[in-house]
Length: 127
Image (cartoon, rainbow, N blue to C red; front, side):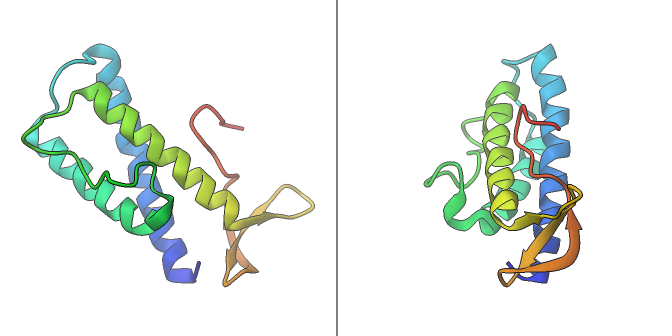
């Protein structure tokens, strides 16, 4: 990864995690309710950005975004977003290095950079 890719990664991962949190709350209350068009548009934009970042590391090779004509439920969205979060965790893990005091740094062009990052996370792994 290069510096611009790292910046894009972190921005999109933050958006992905936030929309996942919000959709999880909705899904717990009303899992089978259809998502409204406004939220679907936002979620699809985030997913499209994430697809560009993940490239061949996407969770589903053929999935590009939700079909607005086949309106997904809240729980459908949560399932897909959780898979994207797991893939982001994998990419972070493959592109960061830990030092002796449990600090993580991005690898830029395969070399340790001075850009700190968080511990690679996946769903269910919040240490």
